[in-house]
Image: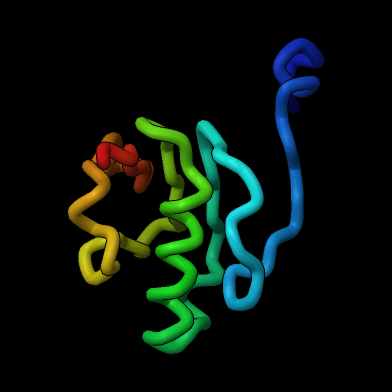
Length: 91
């Protein structure tokens, strides 16, 4: 999986994007699948929580087919690696 030297600096956690707020500033967040199950209001809230949870220049990984195009925070990210659906927080 991950080298133990890297793993000791990682945090794996459950987080409810629909109800929880930001609880740290992370260098990377990988959000796999939940956004497509939310209605528009909850999606917007989730995008804001993800934005607030990332450190400056942090990387957000989304599931294939998900995008930040319609997110209220879209202008605060740049496509970092479109093939792998990675975005970098720039503002």
